[in-house]
Image (cartoon, rainbow, N blue to C red; front, top):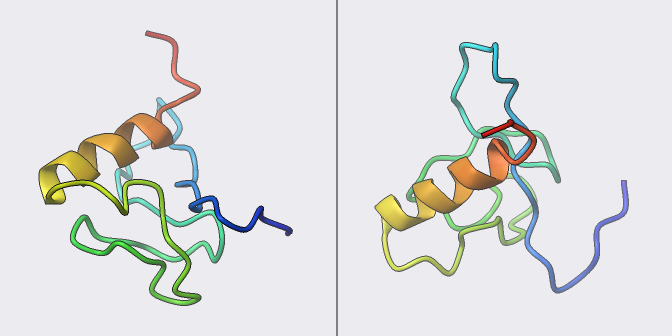
Length: 71
């Protein structure tokens, strides 16, 4: 899959009815923790990489992962 250079990788969308809240990178489909700014496999920046701290990074990634949920 081609990704635009200069843009961070997204988080794979979570399903509302699912039970797994682990974030996976869209670029390599590997799990990523809140303290990690870059994909563990390809070292590409992941959405939230520029956040001030882990809490803000988690919030940014949660919003990205649940972007298709109806609110």
